[in-house]
Amino acid sequence: MIKANFFRRKSMPLFIKYIRKRENSGLVCNILFGGHVLMKKLFIPKYIYKYTRFNEYWVDIFQNRRFYMPSPDELNDPFEGQLLPVGSGTAGNSINTAAGKFNRDMKRFLKNFRILSFSANIRNKAMWAHYSDQYCGFALQFNTRKTFSEVERVIYRPDYETIGAVSIPSLKKYEEYDPIRQSLLIKSRDWENEEEFRIIKEVAHERGKNFANQPMYYNFDLSDLEGIILGANLDFEDKNNAEKYKCHLKNKRKLLDYAHQLKIPVYYSWTVPIKSKIEFYKEGNRPRFDGSSYVNYIEKNF
Image (tube, rainbow, N blue to C red):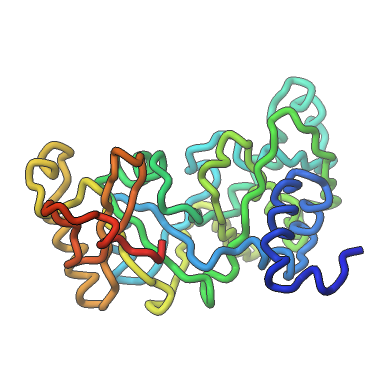
């Protein structure tokens, strides 16, 4: 039993550290998946970040203040939803399991879910490279006070760890989808560096209609957006760099126009090779090559 005074402010960081060390234990998974709000809140950071590139969806983010939510099979991990065994009791699934294949019912019902991913880490070099077009994209900083307070932390587990199967009595009843939804919050430890948080939604259900292939969007309020962070290779003043990485000046100018119109703070990335770090400075406060330290210009809020 944990005493009440353990939850005092100065003890809380130790408590969180204790839980994170044991995040792969059944206890923590049961607490998270059991829906205990207190424990889920402990794992929600003050800010989350959406790494983005200039694709077909980026303008829609600002014009309609929404995100496209992909289905699990649109994501870059082929093992999405497969690390939590779910048994439906349907004939034929035991044959698939024996052959080392995925539960065919799970595969079908996962199509009814959509996922919106964020990261708690804005300094992740690999994510800037993979999800923001080799530092030629941008990232959006959101607070978790209102709209994004429903984000849930992804649990990372060793591939070899055995997890007990969850049984679903009837996959026809949508209220019994919870185990399938939970499976989308478990990923291999190989992805742990992403520090991912997710918002998971089900597509609309209506008798006689199939909405599984319909696009789904997640709307947010302008007050949720705290800042726009430009990739290190989106430095407008360095034309050679922009040309080298084939960054689109038209899109960059358009992004800045949106930021200024909506009065969203803009931050630039500043790579520091001698420290192997990514730092950030506010628009108009660029570090100078005059002998002064770059530390004098970087933002302390990241």
